[in-house]
Length: 197
Image (cartoon, rainbow, N blue to C red; front, side, top):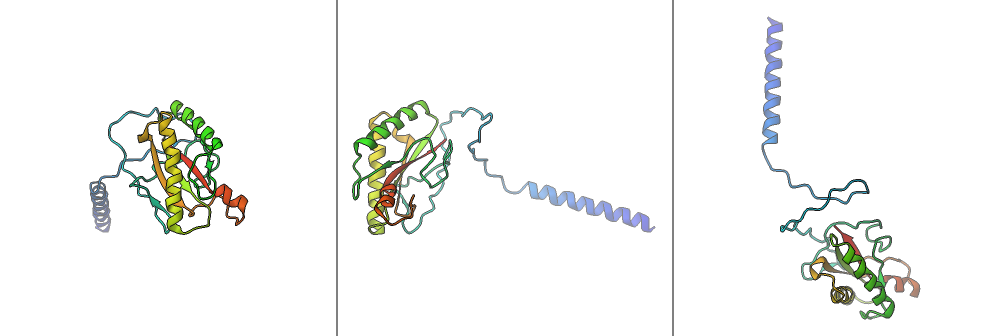
């Protein structure tokens, strides 16, 4: 008799476990998987679709805000550490103190970027405006926006589709160089081009 009781108990436990597993699977629908950049290897060719992925919210801070709802999408591709401004396919451009005007060197760099973007039509770019540590938070956010827009507008004038370009200002929030001298400040007065698929 005890053997038969154990068998029934085992069957009951097994049945309950199956019911719990089935009920857990039938609940919420999983969110769609997001495409992530591959580290090389055989990446599938992108498919064309008219539906855009939802924009991920920008992590805002005291000195960071998205411009006109334009947040960064995706992740950097082709190397480069996030937030460093170095190592990506498109080099940073730099600005003079309190200026959002593109100098000759910056224009030449943006022209090279436009050529690269014409050959890589599957990518989008978030143009990030950055400033040095001097000035107020609001002043640097506005100046960062002007710098990013100047770079974006020049890319558009060179034939890059505006819908492939986003603008964000980080003001003085994400310095490339944490020093407090003219060399550090000059490195931080920049527009960075974050490339994503």
